[in-house]
Length: 245
Image 1: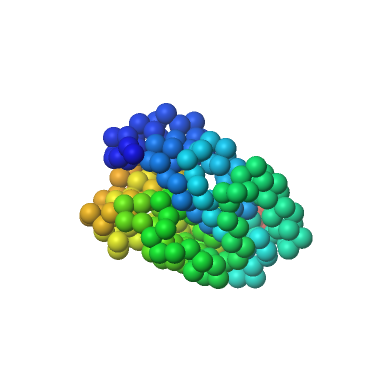
Image 2 (image 1 turned 135 degrees about the vertical axis):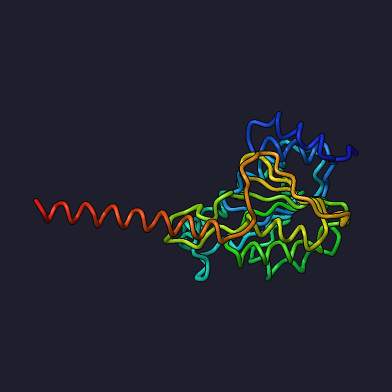
C-alpha cells in the first residue's frame, strides 16, 4: 500500500484532468477496498469508481432517492424523478452488483448498518447545506478506520454556490473546522474537492489550489451584502434617471 502523503497527493492532483480521475487514482494507489458514497444521485461517480478500481471489494451506496421537504437545493427533485434516478444508478452499477451495498435512506437512517471502523474511504456528495455536511461528516467519521480517508465534493470557495433562492453551500469552511476538531489534516483539491486523513496526528489545512481564503463567514456575508447594495443602488439610479427624462 502506498502512503498518501502530501507529495503524492499533490502529484495525483496535478496529473488528474477531472475529479473522477483523481479519485480513481487515489482509491487505486491507497488500495481502498471498502468504500462508501453518500449522495449517489444518478450513479455516475459510483459507476466510474467501480469500473476503474478493481480492488474495491464493497461499495456502499447511501442516498434517500426521494424528495426531501427540508432540503433547499437545486438537486432536490420530485419523487418520480428520483425514482428514475435510482433506476439509472442501479443500471449503471449492475455489472458490480456483487460488490455494491444499497442503503436507501438519509444518512441518519442507514449509517448504523455500517460497522464502526469498517471503511477505508468515504466520499460525501449529499446535502451540502450546513446542516447536511455537519450530519454527514459527524455520522460517517466513526465508520472510517483510523488512518482512513474522507473525501467530498462541492468544496466551493464561496458559500454562494447557487442563487439566493437556495441555502448556502457550507462544505467549505465546515469541513476544515471538522478536520480541526478531529486533529487531522485536510486538503483542498482541484475541482472543488476535499480530502481529510483521519489520523488524529494534528490539524493542518493544505490548500493545493490557492483559491481558498479566510475561514470566517463574515467576509463572505459582508461581500454579498455589499454586492446586493450596489445592485440596488444601480437599479434605483436607473429608475430615477428614467423618471427625470
